Length: 171
Image (cartoon, rainbow, N blue to C red):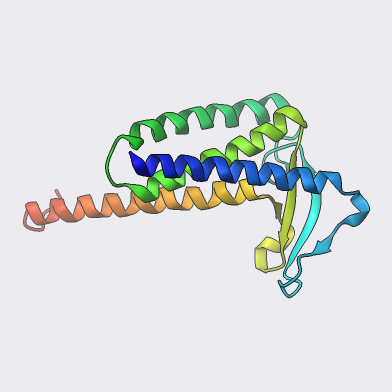
């Protein structure tokens, strides 16, 4: 249960930090962008992009869906997180769920109160060059990988145990 408190604090901290960064970006004039983040060898830029849709502006013409669907997903994931918080272990999955929830809450807050999500990070490397994202998006992506990875490992471990129990016969 203690890990659930730590994961919840991590989630809340990520949400608050992302919202603070978004407010800081919004406070600057558009003419201040793009700007290079010092110490990154010009590989990371700050930009100000207003995204009224899902990633890459998808479904921006359907604002009710863009606001409502993430709320539904956050509610489902929060229920899963609550149920998982009472179990020992599965830390990667707990961290992943907390990250996805925190990032999702930050973006839903933007959609509900600004009408768009503020994206501000651009990484000049490979396929990321054309994408501008925010900390909430990074939390969602990282959390998704943690959830998927932990589920894959858990499934592989269960299959391995079943193989051992049946003497190598999975059928």
